Length: 214
Image 1 (cartoon, rainbow, N blue to C red):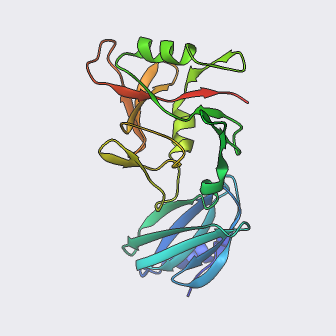
Image 2 (cartoon, helix red, strand yellow):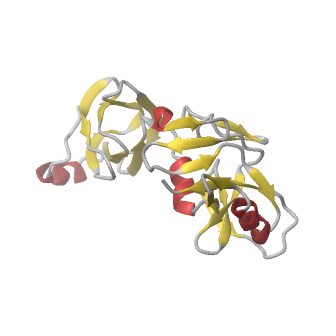
């Protein structure tokens, strides 16, 4: 049986070692089901939905009002706490804008559809500044923007070299590692959603995703 996230339930759940706590987030409001049973409505935009369920393997699904569903599978040991994020409408967030650009309808950002390549931060910045859209030069995407871009449901992936990146299939990538601005240039891994520092002089070629504000 599912237990809702009421304050009174928290005290009960803390004494029940067979339960696990799930802290659930969603980018849009969606209807949650766990192990095939309705489990309530998850609010949108980082408002936490907390619920306690029996430990063990489980399938969670959250369906938006548009009929899109994000399905995830977990196996959680008793007494544990797990954060789960759903993004069921990711597949309809991105729309082509001509043949060269992609619009993110949620953020309003315009992305270059095909990634460029560079070895150094200076080359990455020069690449984006050399691209123009409606008279506005591009810029290297921020880490926060890349993190949102790579927030696709687990069943969405796009080839990126030898890996699979959790981004829209509208993008053309040659590697999972891209340059990111935050505020000095770093690298961001679109497959693992991790990042780190980039040496001033580097031999490794990384992708460059250029972006324009709305």
